Picture: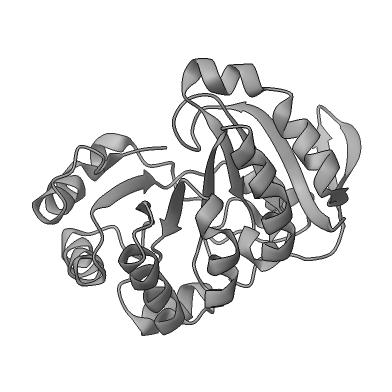
Length: 262
């Protein structure tokens, strides 16, 4: 039985999809987004996180190996809550599809129990990775981080063409896809940029979009890892600030599921 490298398993989550969910954060990501609020999930190695609260220091090791059996058992602990709330499990990260073989061992059993499964991906992975899990995935949350290749490379270090090709592939294959757009000051927080983003997504066949307002929840994690954070002094964004951007999105994607979330 394969092992996965997991950063954390959080129970009773309500912001990673419908209902009460268990969110599994995979460790390891091939992008380096300047605003990342799960910075502890980027490295593929175990990391020591040092917190100082009230003058007291504490250390936590981030990253552990889990067998598919152990992870499935933890997911099934809350099976009754999923059923009652319309929830399920969300595989996030990091980039969960960098561990597609491990996911392909976990997800058929999750599916057999009738548990709704979401994969939250940035999409910069091989087509084969999607093929290994698509039939067991109810919904893909597909992150959009830029409207063009230059900005995508600048802010994430990733391959824009690979991402857009994978997005088109999922939609053409009939998968349920919701594109999630983190709205970031000094990057895509303007009506002009959102218009360009919507044109791109419309061309890819997207139907549903969620806007995620910037927050600074990850600031303490940067400090705990001894890292600098570019957005440390940038205030958390109010949802109301995104209403002009939402209006643009709804011109292109009138679905009720085009909304502000997070």
